[in-house]
Image 1: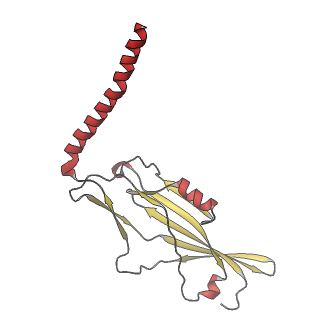
Image 2: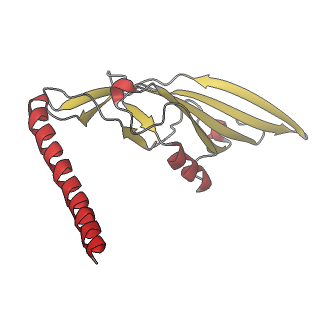
Length: 182
């Protein structure tokens, strides 16, 4: 390792998100513009308004600069710290008030470019990520609302919408009546 020439390495992290979670592509592009990531893209469903039951899975691909000579500095292993801006979708109602979403371990690819006597060589390794704990997936508990409260919430929502409509319609009607009299 100590005899390796100077090189530049980039990590490509691919995260498969379940239907209850999505990544906002605009937020990711903002992070790319700020230089946090080299590149980032979302494949699949990114519509926040779709509930979890009607949405599809999505995949996030992030390219990160992991520096020069990373192989010579970390002979056996190294760590990549990545924070993704993820959002929860509207989950279905549950008796417990929470919906559980499991996010798995991402795939990590490392590509390095080495310069040897004005010749640029590119190598690609696939790094298998081993979980630190016995549980491989991360479980996210998302508040979903209690099914027992849905009837009361529906009545209150309907009443508020109806009263709001009346507060808009009545002044318009009375304004038209008063303007026609004058």
